[in-house]
Image (tube, rainbow, N blue to C red; front, top):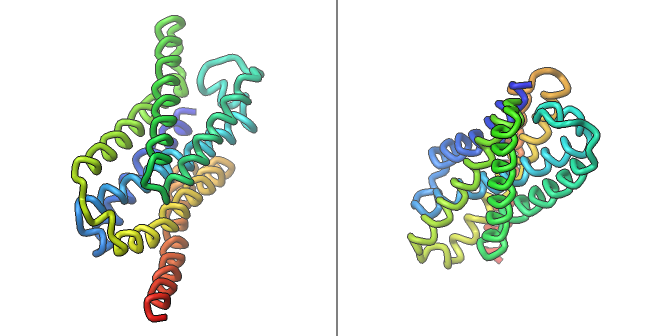
Length: 234
């Protein structure tokens, strides 16, 4: 059971940072601080918010007893269904926010922060009141707090930079080229986590799923670049 929650932290919180670092190293167009921050935010929104939320929804809706046991709470509570739909809402917001750089993204980060901090407070209260040190009541709090800190910190940093590049057509073209990579990475993490859980290879399923998703995203980016170049010639 501990592995489940540690791999969740790796897949949904640390892996987006690893993918960000590799992306920045290999993509010559990601050559400004603003663009590097944007890449990090897009991976976090796609995986830490989007895939994590949808994955959490699946757990609460379809594996509710297993999730309850991992948290150390009674099984069979209908409130888990409500939490499942709340997670699904956050997950969908995260996926949509990949392509947005406006108030929609800010609202998504706020919603993620409120749920993450609120859940952590509930878990801490349970630890203090009942000494519940189950992995779902302790380990999961790392992601609950780390993801909002990263999202808020990077958003604040980007706003402080006020880079004029973000208002240019070149930036919009670049941004559109990156979106399928993050979207498919999120899908790969989610599918890989599920396959890994079913086959007993949770870590490798998640990791290889992410790589496969990035690979598909890169192919999709090539198609977008060709379309953009064709439009420029017309």
